[in-house]
Length: 303
Image (cartoon, rainbow, N blue to C red; front, top):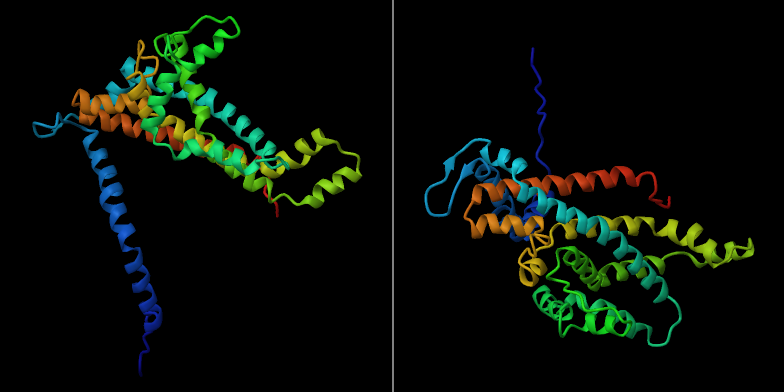
């Protein structure tokens, strides 16, 4: 009596194995870069969040001390509030302005390509240069913005020196960077079938009805995409706050990432900075998941 054994695991043919090896070889620069510069630092920061380290002496295990401090620290809570305030107000206005610009720049206008390039140009300007320029724009005595307001009899404002005006100034500055959203909206508007507008015209629909019954529903996937990216970017605001105000006045522009930078590289609390980093990461991921869940109710995907 012979017993037949069947192997559960079978190697693929040599040709397929060769393709796999070649694929992994071509992808190896990215894989190695991700493991060395992203995965390892993230894993190390988790370990560091439970230690106290000042960059000079060896790390010392402190358990949940950094996490407890994170929730009790009024400065950390203020930094999260500033980031949330900036995000909640700036992002919706950015989306409205960029969508309105996209609608305008898909019309048959003279020099349309010139206008498109002009609105997109700030995206390629380094953030440091933009921060320096806007610092000049908000200058109390020589700023262009106060000069413009003076034409209407409005007195000069201390934009970056008044706690009540500092965050609105940063929100106003954020509109400078809506070119990327505008370009994405322009691409989406060009993909809406013209036949839909023609059918709506035959039914007697006007421009407003076409906008809210056809254009906006068809653009909801791109609106959702731009909203997710804008929220992530706004929570990570760092360079303008560091250069223009350094978190002032009275910590009104101390955003979450700037607070993490200060804790790590100014105060040498690397363990606490790692804990704050993971707190911000969890908040951003939570916001993103919530948006995906809610998007099922209002985002329209054509089947």
